[in-house]
Image (cartoon, rainbow, N blue to C red; front, top):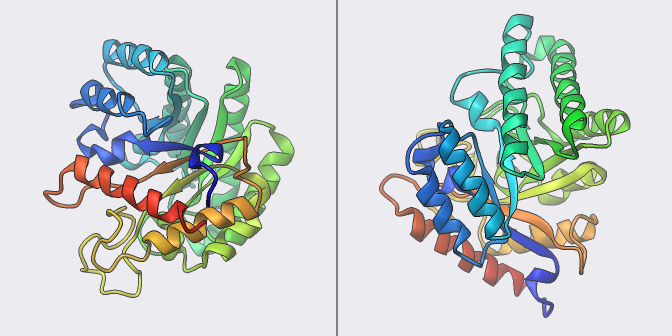
Length: 305
């Protein structure tokens, strides 16, 4: 592609994945967000909960002053606590809904444009019941967010049988959910992720085309091929760096993903949309090296788009 990548993409980084010691809303949150804010390769950032109100306030000001697009990732609120947005136990579902609604408040506090979350585990014989529970949780989020402003509620598509085993899910199910929710709420959309496509057992085209009308956010990253032994390093939804042994995604796959995002209409010249790296250090890898790896991979992929 001869056009500048900035004509199409607002390149982002998921802070709490690149610096996983901050995943629980504690640790070196402010200093690591500062490092991303000072890197002008990134125009967007995705952050999770920040438990200290003063740190949250400082980060909100820093991100505003640095003119970054900010998004709120609520998945750690569920994954680190074992909560499930489609729990069949109504009391437990309401507990998940409560923490997500608290996340919406934090998202507004930090000036976020979007609020991403994930669906939870399910039983195949209780699929429709779980699906209905997710509709309830998502509806509550959309309605509450709408009452406070224009925050977008975004459900991320995850694997359904490898690691997170989320009800949303394979492309046909994601398309069904996206259509149903978008018909009810104009502040809802779906998030796609290159990292999840291999563990969804789908091609990039199979994964993106059915959900194309509902895509409002995108991630890019890697996953170990699911046909490898389950004891392989970084097996599952671990988001290892590009070029990781056994990885399914590298320069060619990222280029294909970006081409498909253009083809389905998410990326358009002159209207840059956010596409964020979801990469996580494995073992003793240096986060800065993993981030640099991601930048170089995107630079090379863009030349092939």
